[in-house]
Image 1 (cartoon, rainbow, N blue to C red):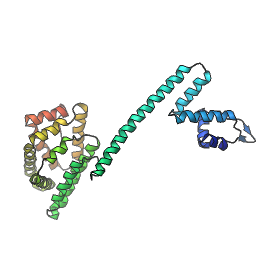
Image 2 (image 1 turned 120 degrees about the vertical axis):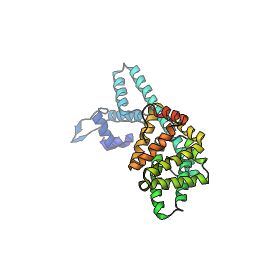
Image 3 (image 1 turned 135 degrees about the horizontal axis):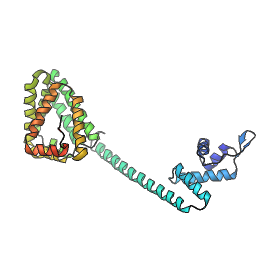
Image 4 (image 1 turned 135 degrees about the vertical axis):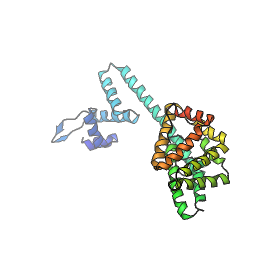
Length: 285
């Protein structure tokens, strides 16, 4: 029979047959009249290859089993290959269950009116709320402030995509009342004008940000204490530093973040929480 006829009978393709030839899984038949003439023995071999592959075995494992079976003396090798294949399938099943759980989370997120983003819904809603408050300001100040807010949101999305934002961060922003959210919008505007207000403006803004954190001291400390420690904790702080530098490249921005960090490190509780997560390495924002 011709190659296409045999492939059709086995439920596969001529391309697959040729691939099995290259791998040495299927013997190449003799030619007759310039064409390969496949016999029943080739079809039987091909059906067995497909049967094994359809049960989850890789072609490498199929080759090992066929070779061991041909020797007729190595049943333990076949069992070992089959057990290994079974473990691989179980691993894939576990990965699929994790993937299914993540899809369920996305379904729930959309069903609750959220958007498909790694940023938790409560944080996304907070940034939307602050953006709405910025729209009430003068256009000249609003546009720069919205750009700053978009940059901060991108930083948080990047961290969220790596699983580096603890759930307590959402609870922290949920505590902020309307007056405090207006204050957040004003602070975003002040940050956008730091190139005009200079060091004095950066110091004042750091003090305002610190005062807001102190009004919610326990929640702010919970966020810091929920950050991972060890190598992962250091990775979090390193990534925050890189993202901050990229998003806020001006030197005056470094003045603000440095002042705010100094205020936090001057408080024993905040300093302990930061050092537990960041380790001994000096934190740079």
